[in-house]
Image (cartoon, rainbow, N blue to C red):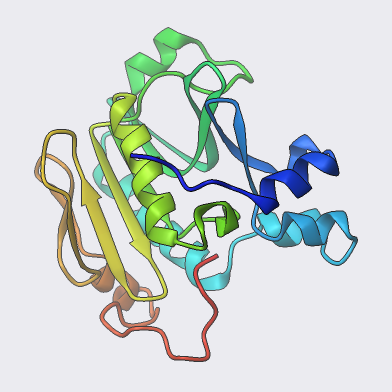
Length: 220
């Protein structure tokens, strides 16, 4: 798949020498910046503002994490979060919201301060913090590209929740991707199915089948 040309956004970023702290991901050496990175450079926002998660985003992530820690055997698996850096190859790395690894595979790689190179079994994303202007403002284009990169690097399943429309994308290598709603159970690992709407309801969160109202901001 051909990625959208960054155009003026990229040219402007290069001219101003964007600090590495504002790089969200890299793909074949090309930076993907944090949303609103240029506002940080102009002093209109702080770095923490563009890197932080909105309330619904972190509520969904913590619900997913609670579910995983309750149901997975931590002697077999590792659950990682907090924008996990996953190195796909030279000049390419992606930030992951939640990733499930085989424990022994990660330990065999060694625990240090470098990005992990072992492919996760499952990656779970919730919205994105990427600047989408390089993708013509198209969230789906960014999601497709990142999902394809992850599957191509050895990830077995990508699950992507979007808060604006309460949808979830499920993708596996060699299989047809499908899009469904939060109240539809999604298989995380064999025999383990996650119903996000039920999880949020149990925690007193928002209903999973109601789309965002017109006044709500786009995914962050």
